[in-house]
Length: 128
Image 1 (tube, rainbow, N blue to C red):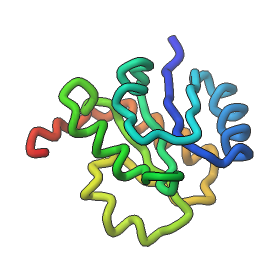
Image 2: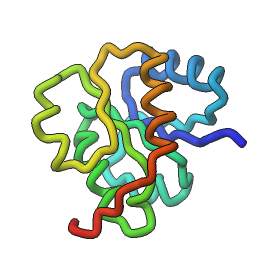
Image 3: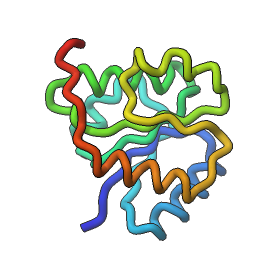
């Protein structure tokens, strides 16, 4: 059964690339260009993994990640954040993401990271 990935990304060209490549890898993708409150979207789709761009209009992927990780029903879902701004790495522990990928990224490395996140047992962030 195909794993479902929710992708929050507003770069249409990157969305096309991710859609073509990850679909060919056997994933089912759901795209949104932005989200201010990601919890209803994740509850509706219940993806196996969430892939977030860090810089989004109106909010950032770190804040969206925190919304997921603070929700008791959703915190088990792995979240990968990607960005072209490596300084973001300094704050990523605060967001509780499962992995970080720097843009530009190699698509095979992205798949490796997705697979690793899907296989690893998810931490429970009760301290949030």
